[in-house]
Length: 252
Image 1 (cartoon, rainbow, N blue to C red):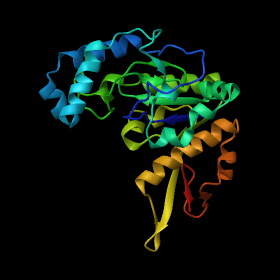
Image 2: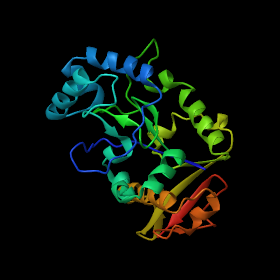
Image 3: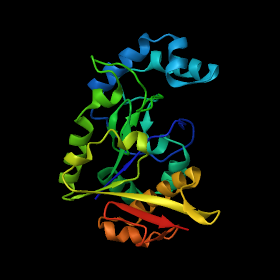
């Protein structure tokens, strides 16, 4: 079973973490091509393209100019320990044991606008680039077109490596659109988290993000390889009536 996640906009390059046997992202050449385009952008264009404040524009323009395709120095650290949004706070990666981190390395993949696909221990440098950004690269009009089949092919290779036919989609809609699910060699299951509010079950985005992280942590900590075991997730309760074969609904 392979689980996919989105990255986070906020990054943590400051906190203490255990020594880890970090790895190098697979698509360095492609990331360099994308970054080459980003380095050419004016601050005004960056602000407009990514809808950033003045301070965030300054920060990320500076990051682009400093970025280089080296991931073995003090300017980089493992993706799972660096992304710091609601989903990743739900995972609480710094509390994982070494065995659990190794399990995550084999069974978890993080989709990325800059890197395509990251393993948890792949080192990253500071960056911000959402998959939905309309950035032309190599005669492709946006990142979805640029990455093309690379992400899907990489996920299929990961499924083959763990001898599984199940992809668990815990990524946001912006990111899972980068995957051609028709070409995935197996079943795709998308857990959906709904809270009872104003007389009905509905998705509350902040809580749903936290739940995606907590389910990811649940998978990693319990070494889950059988998708049926996801139904034991106890932050929410699996609801068979609301679910389908491809969309598993969890409620509370």
